[in-house]
Structure formats: C-alpha cells, structure tokens
Image (cartoon, rainbow, N blue to C red; front, top):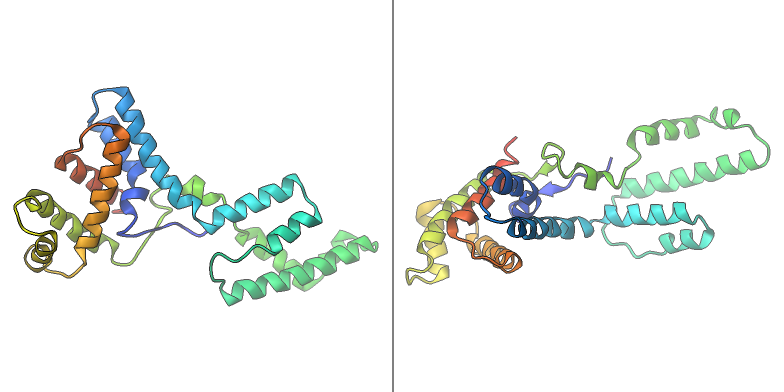
Length: 240
C-alpha cells in the first residue's frame, strides 16, 4: 500500500477540488455553458495532479514501470544512483538491505540448481515473502485512491482549524475592501471573529491567489459566494 496523501489546511482546497467540482457542476449548476464547466474542471484537476506529481511515490512508480519495460543493469544503476528526494526511515533502509541480501542468496541458489520449493524452506526467505505479499507498496495506488475521501489521511486539527478559517474568511470577504489594511483585518478576525491565532493572513492570501488563477483559467469573474461554496464543498468532503 502506498502512503496516503495527507489532507491539511494548506492543500484541502486543492485535494478536495475533485469533490467540490462535482457539487458545483452537477448539483448547483453554477456555470451557464459547457465550456466554462470544462475549463473549471481542467483547472481543478490540474492543481490536484501538480500535488500528486511531486510525490516520491510517483517517481518510484515511473522507475518500476521503466525497469519492467526494459530490465537491464544500466536501468538498475540509474535507480540506484538517483539522488534521494526525501529522508528515509532507518527501518525502511534496513529492511531493503536485508531483503536484497536474501533475494541475492535465493537467486544464486536457484541458478546453481536448487529447486524453488527448497529455497522457500529458508525461514528468512519465507517470512519476507509473506511480509511483502501483504505490504509491498503499490505506488500507483495513491493516484487510484485519491478519488476516495475515506482513503485520504486527515492531518491533526484539520477539521477545527479549517472550520475557523472558513468562518473568518467569510468575514474577510465582506470587509477586506472597507479601508482596513489586510494585516489589521486579519488580526481583528483572529482576535474577535474566530478568537484563535491561526496566521489566517497567510491562508487567505493563498485562497485569493488560488481563486485569481481559477478566474483567469475559466475566463469569467468569481464572486465571494462562489469562493465560499467551493471551499466549504472541499472541506465537507473530509468530514467523515
């Protein structure tokens, strides 16, 4: 099983876009023409793919596919010498080293005439086989399962924090053009509206940038009601 994609307050409006798009297009019927719907859906899913494409799991899936299509020593060296993109858990490294050694011994024995059923009598080999049969990562699973909100991992504090962010964002959208500076407005929201320090200014700037890009992609204006509907639809998908 691949590692689950973690939903946080910083990415829920991208990961949840797939669910929001269904509600907005199929249920609310916000758009008046098919072209705008298509542009909206394309934008939403391109943002999601951008997140997934940065995952180390996708890199591994591509490596494995390339090696399976052309299994030679040079391809193995390319994988072996690839620079690490993330820190590795020491246990994972040790498991890989043990597995490699036992795999090598098994292949060597089979090549020298030992029958496969005899190799399986080796306790270490048998234990590893049973382990990998259950635990071998399917690195493409993340891209197959991302459409299922129950499969995604929700970060600690997500539900409460995003609920407060949305409450404050509603106030922000109504009052951000009333002459008060953005910094003062966000401080007021944290002090009086949600009564919690969440550095909302950073999140609201991300929201505004996201919707600005969406507006450009669709080619039509996006009002405040649409913004809130979209964000709440993304959020509600993870209230499971």
